[in-house]
Image 1 (cartoon, each protein chain N blue to C red):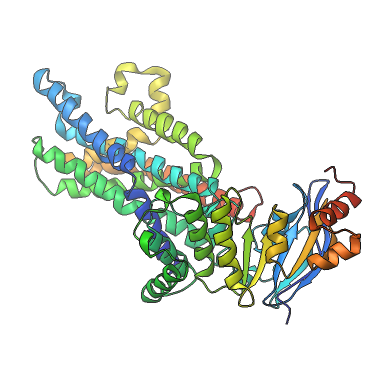
Image 2 (image 1 turned 180 degrees about the horizontal axis):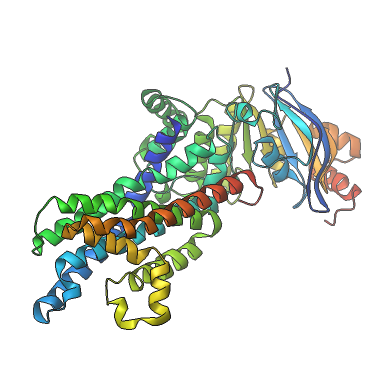
Length: 244
Length: 245
């Protein structure tokens, strides 16, 4: 079974079409990146797939469940690390993790055990008792991803996970994301082309709400007769008349 | 239960914010001490502790709207609510989770207020327990206002509306600081049409043991609390299912 199948997924705000008949398939265990310039429809697509925004038309099946007819079933299988850091500021790291585990149905004991596991896995032992608001941007982002993983999601959405981080923090997070490859289906949105190229199994390029191309970085470069991924991206995004 | 887990998070967020404790508990207590000192030097019947304590208890509860509204608005503003809305929490879980921690806070706040009043000479009697019960609809009212404000406004707007406007309105129009009959006219008409003076009057009636006088006033508070809570739940549910959160 595929992880995600979208069929003519469309979102309109009034007369403005933000996502236009998006049809694509993402396989289980894949790290799939959604790229596009601002306003391409990436975040709206993620919001629809997470049940945060209702499609105007079309549908998506996530591991067999429809986002239109059974969003509750979808929500129990997924988790998201939003674009902005989304942590509870006055809670310590361990409490942030335990809270999310419990919201996904874990008992208090199970939640504590899972939190310990995530703290070890993400190298957060030294900051486990610190309040989230006192952490650096990099640690907050790391915590945010750990919170998204503590529910053992089958599909994980990472919306701009390294936005605003310095090079070292970004590379550290890349390591974390790489360690998840093959275990969880990951949908990544990013503005950093080198990030998508380095991490992704496949990349989709969106422009003006439409899917322009899908493939590996090499396939996209071959298809556009370019040597660099950035050039391939520019060629595909420019095809739709997007100003770059 | 998911709502209990969410409520636990909200309780910690609220109690760990020192401003909440300073405004919710400290400010009404300072006012009580100040007005009691004035009363000791220049006796004013309105500031007798049996009348003052219920008024300050209602005034203290008005800060609950600020706490809850700010928490919800901040969650909306920081994407934390996006994470929560993507989780399998139902609308009921959210509403219970946001409101549950506020009830014990409101009751504790009123208990501290009456506890301080005992030290300032108020008689320790069972009527105070009845007064605490009569304050429950007022607590629901202020919790509901917070839920409504937090669903509609950002945290700065909540600070302005609930922190400045609501606390002042509920103070001026409650008959705690001055006798509304002395002002009269449109001011008194407006005050009588709003629930704050009725909440204070009901609690004062309970403290004085005049139980028959509780309910005419308490109906006003119950009516407002029910109406605003229903409106807050509708608005929160709409926000939850809409794209503009």
